[in-house]
Structure formats: structure tokens, C-alpha cells
Amino acid sequence: AMGKKIKSEMDKQRETFVSGAAEHNDVPKKQAAAIFEQIAKFAGYGFNRAHASCYALVAYQTAWLKANYPVEFMAASMTLDYGNTDKLAVFKQELDRMGIRLLAPDINKSDVMFKVEDGAVRYALAALKGVGEGAMEGVTLEREENGPYKDLDDFVSRMDHKTMNKRQFEGLVCAGAFDRFNANRAELHVNTEMVLRFAATQAEDKESGQVSLFGEADEASKLPPLQKTEEWDHLEKLGHEFGAIGFYLSAHPLDPKAGQLSRQGVVSYTNLAEELKSRISSRVQLAGVLIKKQERMSARGNKFAFLQCSDSSGVYEVMIFSDTLAACRDLLQPGTALLITVDAEEKEDQIRLTGQMIQPLDQAMATKLKAIEIHMDAPAPAAKLKELLEEEGKGLVSISLYAYTNDNDVAEITLPAKYAVSPASIHTLQKTPGVIEVKEF
Image (tube, rainbow, N blue to C red; front, side, top):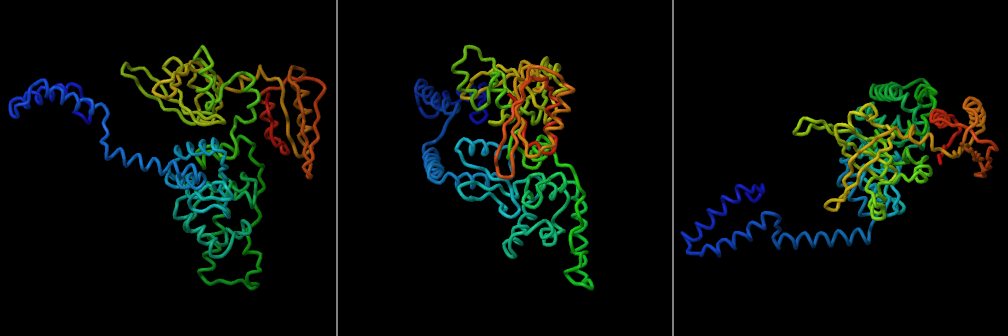
């Protein structure tokens, strides 16, 4: 009755306890009832003192470690939960709050588990989705015994093809573990099967003792040229990275819109609690990329859903009822950027969000766009921009170009006229080779 907190059963136990105390132990009913009240309170929430003191000591030790060795503490905490993506995402938010960098996975720098590196936390290879701890132990052991991998060719010749499958290799590619060898993740991704076939063939030749006429210098022992592939655009790259890691690590899809969202009064999730203190209304707008949707059925037979979303500051959950769910069901695809109008309620030290209206973010912001900045490191985007602007015509959006040279010099050019710029045009620019980033204001 106490463990399950069943009131009806506790009431029965009260009668048994009071009557039994009087009948068998000569305890007055009033005193027995008072004793039972103490027991009943403990049933609500109870913690014995010996247990509480142990927890207090562990809490003190943990707090001391976090305060005095924050980087080591966070690396150890992430290692403890390396297989729990949701927990790792929370740790990422805490690292951001503490001002500690989380370094991307790197085939020559990362260990199997999280580690400290130059005052930052280096991401663990085994924490990537689907790669497996055993396979990554083999990769790091080979590196420790025979030195860092020199290039992709060297990695392929030294890896154990029996413990490296397609899913594992693609996971490493999408997470950026091979960026030091080839920053074009799309190219490595497309060539995965060829790379693995080549590795298997090479291993079989070694095991069979076959040696070419020209020995190791034979060109056949080198990885064939990779099939040339256009690089993923910024959003595609982040989408694949999210799939491999479980959250956005190197950047966030909403980063380019940060200026525009701030200007329109869209609240970041991290600032929500503080924002609510200064507002009369609890209705606010949040932007977020949908991570996943869970639909449920109420006791009355109505459908409702929980939406897990992510903005540049963290991950949050929104509940929507049947009417809102029916109105926006087609929008609720993972990876979609949304503008969500919510009612925020602070309850039991937590903020609960109930969605009232959901719109596609690009569509909602398109009519409010005032300016864009195009950052580029090649001349090609200028020609593409000219073509797009001729199609779109005049409008209200001002455009600035930032051209970067190899010497890290930058030339800023602001176009004299204002133009109409659609979400489709911005997406086309983001995919144009030579464009580093498009920022919206």
C-alpha cells in the first residue's frame, strides 16, 4: 500500500493497525492513530536518514569534482552514458552552458570512450550510432600500436574488414571522423561499398600470401580513385551528422536564422524561463527542428502527440492536442523546421509546453525577411545570385556579400537595390559550391 501509494488500501491498513494496536498491545486508539499518521506521511515520500546521509556525501563529492575538474567530470559522465543519445544531448547542453568545447569525432584523435583533450571533451567513437564498441577498440588499438593513420588509403589497408561493415563506416563518415582525410562527406558516403570491397580483397590477398611482381609498390595495392560526388549542402550535412550522432554537434540548422528569429521575438528554449518572468502572457513562439513525434490516445479516444524539437540552445518537448495534431499532421516529419506557438506553464519546477499553432518555419519567416548575408570563398556564387535575383525581381530584402580570400582577408559588398528573396532561392544558394553560409535577418 505504501509503495504503490494506494489510498483505499492505506485506509484499510489504518483500521487494521489501530484496532490491532489496541487489541494486542494495549495501545490507546488515539496514540495508535497518531503513529499511523507518521507512517502515512512516510508513504507520501520517505527517505531514511542513513540512506539520505549516503546520498548527501555522494552529492558533495560529485559537486566537488564538477567544480574543480569540470572537463574530466563531464568526460567521465558522458562515458558512463555513452550508449544513451538522449543523455548525451543533455550533457552537450551542459557543456555549452559551462563554456567547454565538445570536439567532433576524429579517427586519429578520438578514443573508444570520451576523453579530455586540451581543455575540451573529445567525442567517443563508440558513442556513434551503430558503430559498436568492439570495432572501435580494434581501430584505436591499431592506431596506438602502429601510429596515426596517414590518409584514407592507410586506414583502409590497416583496418580489420571483418569488424567494419557498411553501417559502421557510413556512421564514421557522417559524423565527420574522416574529415581530416576528405572533408567531402558525401563523396566518402557514396564510395563506402567500393572502399569496403577493396579492403576485403586486400585482406584476402594478404591471407593467401599473394605478392605482386612489383611488391608493395604495385598500384593495385592502392585504393582506386573515389567516384567524384557533389558535397552535401549545409542542411544535408547536418542531417546526416544528426543521424550518426543523435543530436546536432558541429552546428545547428537554425543557426543561419538566429538574427531573424531574435528580431521577430522568437524565444530560444534556454531563455524561456527568464522570458516568462517578464511577460504578462504565457503564450510564446519557439522555433525548432522536429526530432521525433509520439502519438498517443486519450481515455476518451482522442489522439494527442508529444513533439521532441531542437533549437540552437537545446532540446525541448511540446504536447499538442487532437485539433492541432489534425491541422498540422502533414508538417510533422523529422528534420522539418517549425515555428510553434505554445502556452508555457511552470509546474513543479518544470516548464510544460502545449502547442497551439504550428507552421513551417521558412514559410512563416519569408514575409518578415529583411536582409541576408552571403558568406563565400569562391566567385561562383556571385553568378548564381545574379541569376536568382533576376528571376525574383525587386522587393524588400537587402543583400550583403562577404568574400573570403586564402589569406583570410574579407571583402564586404552591399548591393545597392533591394530584392525579393524566396526560401527556395536561399536553399539554392546554400547548395551552391563556394557558399560558406547564408545568414537571415
